[in-house]
Length: 137
Image (cartoon, rainbow, N blue to C red; front, top):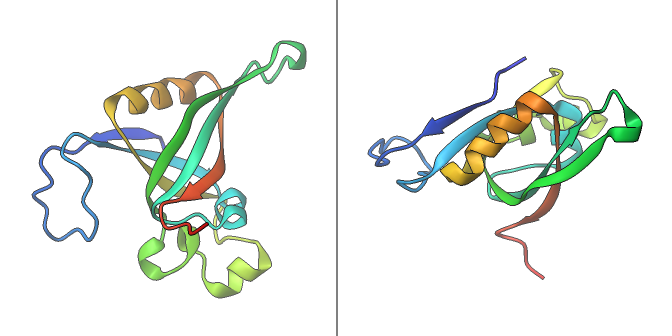
């Protein structure tokens, strides 16, 4: 499984990249189950809510809290090849990915990135689709 990590982006001088994050932003790399990625049809610029559940082994004391109410997706696993998290039209229709996990890259500032890293160590992260910047009412 891929380890999650925060990447500091300084001044965005890499002109080869198609989408540049802001100079004070961080990208957070998070592996998610392929079923989540395919089921939600996640793509660049979608907004997701991140929740953390702790004490899952003890259901009576388990707690779930919203960690980040709306964080933007910077990129998804194989988005450059056209599918959500690297899904091709064939495997997207079947609901099955080609691997058990897919990489999700979230755009956050330091205040959002640090809690994500900590929460990943102490609990289980889940996400839900909130919306997209391109969503038309």
